[in-house]
Image (tube, rainbow, N blue to C red; front, side, top):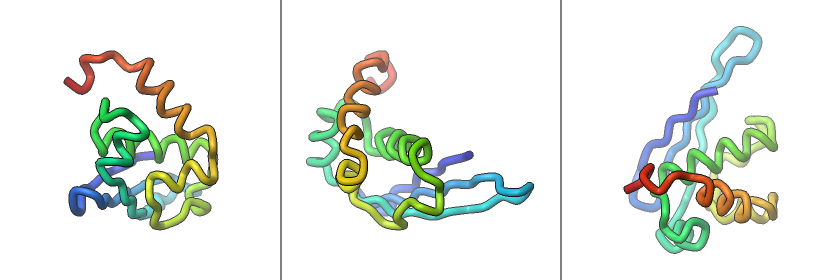
Length: 102
């Protein structure tokens, strides 16, 4: 599975997921909205938006089939479906070496 994150504006991002399905590559495209306030609430601004979106989609793909993921979401919406998401983000950030994003 390959993820590509593209900034469409400061708060909107495109996410392309390329996956293999029966020896064919399938491409799924998603749109994500994330404000600076969302980033700060989830990460205390310790990572950038691209890295959080990448982490969020890895999280989603670990919990859902690619076809079951909504095509457009606000990053906070993930917590409505997966209440453990904010704590999982916090654990991910706490385990990360500080030098990765300096």
